[in-house]
Length: 309
Image (tube, rainbow, N blue to C red):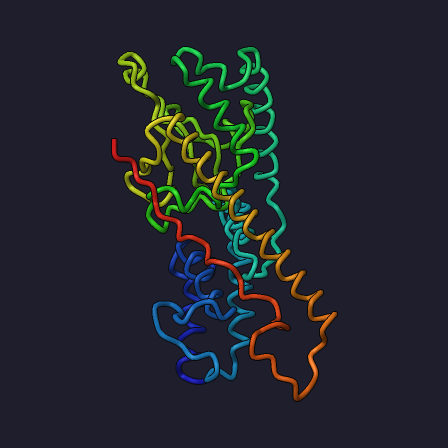
């Protein structure tokens, strides 16, 4: 081994269950494995060059063995930490550790699943979640209209018409079902009523009954799991959202109509070419036998519509 490799081997030993780093060593080993897999340039806080490590495979095997050692150790002494380690590895498949699901985690999931079924059964007695919005004048109807539009207009089509920062992207959002199981699974605070989302982010209503008492519509906000504050204003009301979704639908239909006319033009040009095949040496100064016309007007840039109220 080179001196750098000897140093890495010593760090792996320190972070193992029998080492001196304690359970924090497990996290350091997982990060080190990212280096061995080619996903990180540093190992134990030092820049490394895998191409200059002849014993790279040996070190990687030692790192994996130490992580598995912690997995077994946590299974005996700290089941919750074992579950954390397992779930982290599941979320990062490139680590390729292929750990068995801890029995403690399996039991916990079964318990939580039973509680969720009981919760949903009790809440279903009150109808759909949107039924609870009937105390807010016009809110239930506005949300119903917005959902109907959302069934035929994608969030991707709407994005150019809202003034959100680049990182607040709704393009891949999907609508949540109007049932208590979907609301419960989203696990948001009671003041936020999610209606769509993806990857931990969501779009929904901010429920504040003090607004209802003043006759102010419920605003629609973006919940971003990496932001502080987590909520960002999107629409002042369902009515405003319906206007924007409707505008996006009209522009979407117009683009499709333009696309159809362009396609017909290209088909007509192709048929002309078949009737009048090009022949080498023949010029066509007036464009009688021109090929398909260039694509029509460029798609209009999606100007953002910002709330001015």
